[in-house]
Length: 153
Image (cartoon, rainbow, N blue to C red; front, top):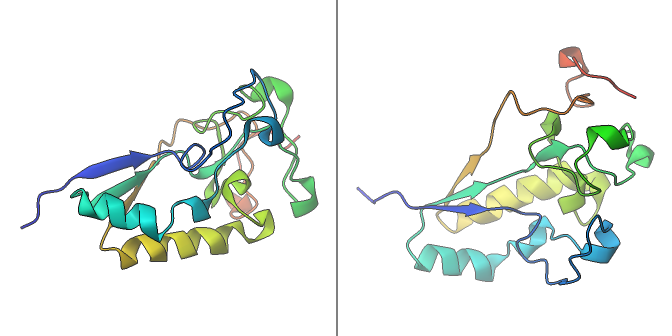
């Protein structure tokens, strides 16, 4: 039986080569990685190092200052977000993924599924954070509106 070795990966930072690091900077100023940065070369390298699992941290949609109202996502209330990027532990929808990490935010779920397929193709398994008590005060699910309990704006 293969020994379990877990690599924790924060998609927001993995592959982000922008080194501005402006305090409270926007996505355009500080940059953000996307799911395609977790590419075949990176996955082959992780597998070659002996990792068996990728722990993708902060994938669920969370409170951020980025405006995705064109996608039907409610805008975040500034006092409900931690800085402009927000905290990946202030989750606004446990059933959705963060649009910041997508090339095309409208296709974020399809891009995330493609990422999972890419990871599995390299013989790696995926772990996701699910911290049910780490939700934003502005929690509002567009995927499962029947489970809403937060303030929608």
